Image (cartoon, rainbow, N blue to C red; front, top):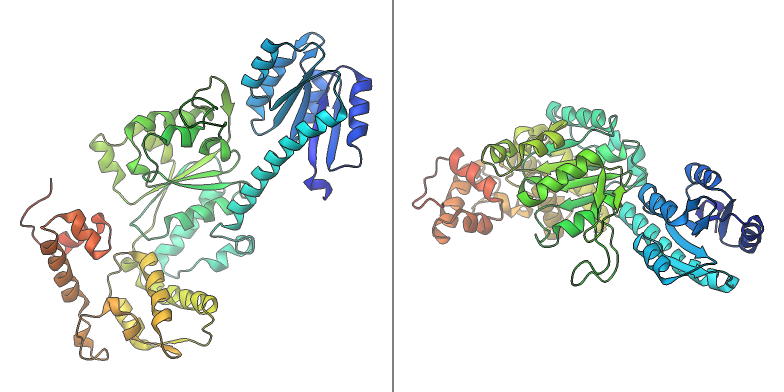
Length: 463
C-alpha cells in the first residue's frame, strides 16, 4: 500500500509512554500513525493531516474526552473514533457511542484488541473509498475528459457555446448555487458535471439525485441521513446526501417536484451548511454546493405556491438555460457524428458513413426529446443498419408509415405526420394528456407545447 493510501491514525493520550508504544506497534504496517499528548497538539495534527481514525483517551488533564469526541465528530464527520479509558463505566460507554464513537476499549488492553477494532474500522473506511471511486468511475465525464473538457463539449451554435461559457463562469465561483433550466433531454446533468469537474471541487463527490424519484417517506432520511434505531428499518447509521457531498457537489434534478414539506429543511441546510441526522441531536457541518435543474417553469410554480420563493432565490444565484435542440439546428450534425463515432466503436461497427438524406431529414424533425432522443435514435439506427451507410430507413421515427420513397421530400412531411400521431394518441387515450404523452413516449410538458404549437384542441380538458 502506497504511503498516500495508508490509513492515518492519531493517538491522543496524555501518557507519552503509551502513545509511543502504540505508535511503535503500528510502525511498518499499513497505518501511518501520529502522536499527541495534549489537546492542542492533537488539534494541530487534525488541521494539518487528513486523519482517518482517532484513538482518543476519554480522560485528559483538565478536559472531558467526550467533549473532544463531540467536537471532532462535528468538525470531521467522516473520521472514525475509538475511545479508550482506564476508568470505563457503562454510562461513559453509552455516551461515547451516542456521540459517534466507533468502538470503546478499556485499559489495559492487548494490542490484538486494538488491532481487531481498527480492522473493523478500516473495512468501513475502505468501503467508503471504494464507493467514492465507483462514483467517479461511473461519472459521465472521465478523468481524461476533464482535462480536455472544452474540446469534448459537443456543439457549434452560438446558443450552446454561450451555455458552455456560463458553465465555466459558474465553475470559477464554487460557492455559488446554480439553477439549470431546459426541456427534458437537453443535457442539464452534463452541464452540471462540466461545472463540477471544472471547479476546485472536482476531486470530491458529484452526487446526482432525482428529487421526484425518492419516496416521500424516505426523503428526509436520504438527504439528512439517520441514526441507527431512529425508525423501523434503520439498522445502521447512514450518511445522507448532504453529508456524502462534503466539499463536493449535490446535483438535484427535477427540483420543482420536491415536496413542500422538505423544501424548508433543504433551505435551512443550504443556508447554514449544518445538518442533523434523523433521530439524532448532533449537528454536522458539511460544505457542499448545490446545482439544481428543472424542465418546468419554476417561477410559475412559485406563483402558484407550489415552490418556496425563498428556496428559489437561494438556488438561483446563477441561472443557465439550455435551449432545445430545435432552436439550434447547427448542433444536430456534430452531435450525430459524435454519437455515430461513439456507438460504432462500442458495437464494433467501424467505417460507418451517414447519408445526406439523414442530415436533411433531421433538420426538419422537431426533436421533442432533444439531445437524448437524437442519441437514442442514433444507437437504434446503428443496431438496425445492415451495411456501412446509415440511411433514412434506419431512422424510422422520422418517417410516416407506408412511406413510398424515403428519397422523396414530399414523403417526409414531419409536421403532418406529427400532428396525425398526436391526434391518434389523444383519441386512443380518451383525451387524457398524461396517457397520450405516455403513448407518444414524450413528457407531458412537451405534449402541451405541441398542442399549443399546432393549435390542436381537446375534446375534454384534463383538470
